[in-house]
Image 1 (cartoon, helix red, strand yellow):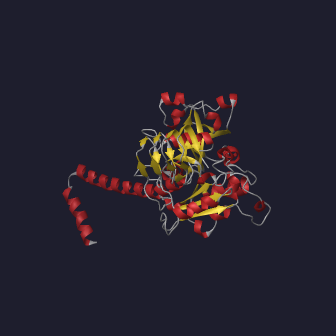
Image 2: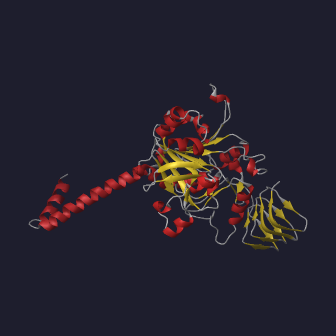
Image 3: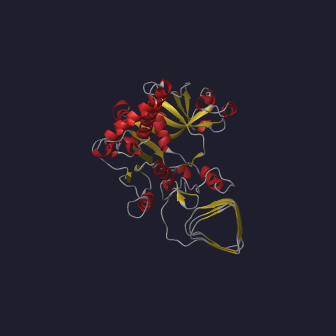
Length: 419
């Protein structure tokens, strides 16, 4: 205490009879204190311990058949060695979020197996004091508990008790994610924006052009980014009515003219109390976030738009799956699994490195455990443990099967091989 007093007296003595210097000293002290408080507030707003992520396992995935014949949509392979579920899981890990629930319903066995191998406490990614839990649709007491999930909101509603138990007492915000999207995102930047804006709900959105706008839920916003109106997949005149000035979200004038729509990514963050209120009391029969709860909440609650102006793809159809896979072979790709600062995680496999004999490989992805002999592969993705023998030419192809063997001389162009 004495040392601190002497130090204070020393500083005062240095600036005695020098009013300018004294004011500078006081100003510096005040600035340091203010900066310290701002840093503490910033850290508090970015605290991932107060966030829980809920990843939705999706429906039957009929548009991705036959890839979903025996697996859930999030278990569909992507990029040769990964599963779609690895995308939101890796984003959570890289964002520091270690409390994650995955809600599943259809063909969940392979997804559960992958999660257990990749994200458990023994052999996979270490989650410290967090958890990763796969929760399948199940029957519970009461009329509502006797049916399957009826939609995204209904799935979360049927597990509302997760956010009310002792383990969730510190949780402030609930992050709702989809298990079939390809993108890289810092979720805590998203959550921090949500908290700083004072919103009840924040929707991550993309600027969109005319060609794809009608495939998504679109939003009208004011000049502060508040959502005024929400329309799910509008067409014709309804679509035209959803045009907005996207410079409000930070786009340049030229870019805003090309992309006059704001499309929902299906990625939301809710204040925990608001989410429980909406699901249990305000809209107890609403089944879907995008088409029911969000549009109905726009007038009553503060909903803000958060711009994500980077690569994002909804892997909801065979076409989008094929194109997203092949886009990974571009040079450079719009999305890369090779970012060392924000890596993508998956399950460890005890497989040897791929072996390539007398073959030519151009701009392709060859997954581990594969054997290539006297073949030509260009702009293609070859899955795990594939064996491709003499005189095979693959061009713009995606092989998604494990233990795929191509023995006969053949040329395949623009093909997706799945067995």
